[in-house]
Structure formats: structure tokens, C-alpha cells
Image (cartoon, rainbow, N blue to C red; front, side):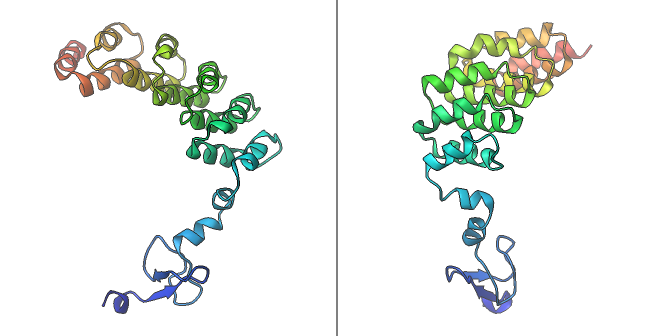
Amino acid sequence: TFIDIFPAGTCDTCGTIVCGHCIDHDLPDQTGAICRDCLFKQTPLGRLAESTSGDLCDILSDPASDESVLAARILGDRGDDAACAALYQALSSERTEVRRESAAALGNIKTDDAVSGLTRALNDPAPAVRARAAASLAQLGVTDAVPILKKLVDDPSSQAAGHAIRALKKLLKDDDTGYFKSLVKEHPSDFIKCEALGVLADTDVDAALFAALNCLD
């Protein structure tokens, strides 16, 4: 009955039945239909997903490649330790988007080189890279990064500073709310005060309420 109401076609590539009105598929008519998986394989990301990690590392290492960002993303999704060296090297790329995506990818690879590279990336000239490095360090659970992340809270970029606050939320113990209380009370940035108050609201409601009452004036 469903197919009578929503006419289905058959994927020209793999033979999967494709609902004619499904937003996840292309070409709703009976002919020329293609399923989501086959459609994905036709995209640049889908084509690269079929590549070996070695080939992806070669693409990432090529400064002239237009597919470096996608290569870094796929390597990160795979979490392959063997790709760490290429991703570490890519943190020195001249292209901000490559450095950012490489920092994100290293968040799935817990090796000494990954942690070292991400720690160094906290000083990257691009706020987006600093922010992504902070998030990746928190994802890896690198508590040794807490001191430098506290310094990043004072970053002139709200993007980087905000990610530093969220990273510290993950790395500091749930009962360690004193740091965030001090930010709400003493930090000169209203943005940081609000971010810290949000952390308190998620971890210690009583502390958040007390801090919020002190902020009313």
C-alpha cells in the first residue's frame, strides 16, 4: 500500500528499492533512481572513502591537493594510528582548513605525537584551529593540557575561548567547580562569565544559582 501511494523505483546502480518521495534519495521518478549509498559514492567524500589510508596520507601530504581536507576527515573517522604522522605534519600546512581538520582527526588517535601536535596547535594563529585542538584534547582526555587550556580561556577569540571552557568542563572533575565559580566572579569578559555559568548549571545547580544571583547586579 505504501508503494502504491509513494511510487518506488529501483536504484540503477545496486538494485535497491528507492522510495519515490524519500528525501534521502535522489530522482523521485521511476527511472534513473539512485539509492543514498550509491549517491554518496558519487560525491568527492564517497570516492575518497574507498581509498586506502596510505593513499589518503599521500593526498594529505600534497600541499597542492584540493582533497586534503576530506582526506584528513576520513583518516580521523578511521582512527588509524598509522595516519598520525601525516596528520601531525598537516598541522603545519599553510591552509587553515587543513590544519583545523587535521586537529579534529587527531582527536580520534591517542598517541604521544597526537597529543604533542594538538598541544602545539593551541598556539596556532587561526582561532578555528586553536578551538578544534582544545576540543580534541578534551576528547582524548588529556588532563595534562588543563593548565594551557586555562590560559586559552583568555584568548581574544570567543571561538577559541569558548572551546577551551567546554574542554575544561570535560577534563576537570564534576565536583571541581571552584575554577568555574572564580571565572563567573572575577573574569573581565562577560562572554566567559556566561560560558562558565553554563558549565555550572550542568554540573552543580546550587553553585550555578548562587553565581547567577551574584550576577544580577
